[in-house]
Length: 216
Ligand SMILES: Nc1ncnc2c1ncn2[C@@H]1O[C@H](COP(=O)(O)OP(=O)(O)OP(=O)(O)O)[C@@H](O)[C@H]1O
Image (cartoon, rainbow, N blue to C red; front, side, top):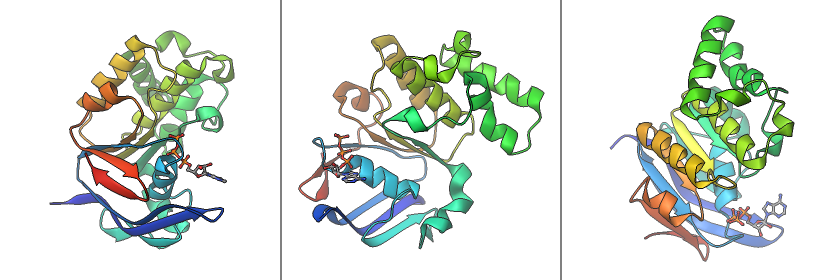
């Protein structure tokens, strides 16, 4: 089976505390998996390693069968990975919602008109079109989370790494996110404490527990 992400014997420790050791995980092309685990077990750290934001102490990460030997190596896959951090405060690059959502596609050289149309469509899909001219930093935490997700989804990355995507979202917004993520046929790793949310997205759930990943 073709794999998007392969993790081999990954170990990570921070401040002398081992978060995981010799961890292995394979995520197939277009497979969705969820990772659960108690607070501080290392779920966000694992996602950051896969996203190329921090380096593991040991082990290998392969993206699309290519080994990521250094953080620099991730550059060529920047457009293929959509990483939603748990805390989106530092995520945004532009002051207004519409500018931020348009940023990546504009940077790729697409015309302003084309990108604006796509951005409005994405905002409409997520039911946040009225927010388009708002200053991002005036938005609520939940609104910011949906805007960040819109900014990721518009670039159509091949792998989505979503850290607590429903954190701070009301029931209606959660339902919308579930529908959108279910309609996307991409590889996804979803970290969440929200059981029913996870179950509505994937039957493949792993628990990060006592240094290793166990399939539930
Ligand atoms: N930059 C850092 N400096 C020091 N300690 C860190 C750092 N990043 C993470 N940690 C520690 O590593 C441990 C794992 O953190 P991580 O955020 O990966 O856990 P988590 O499973 O995602 O937790 P939660 O479910 O609470 O979000 C925690 O004890 C955290 O305090």
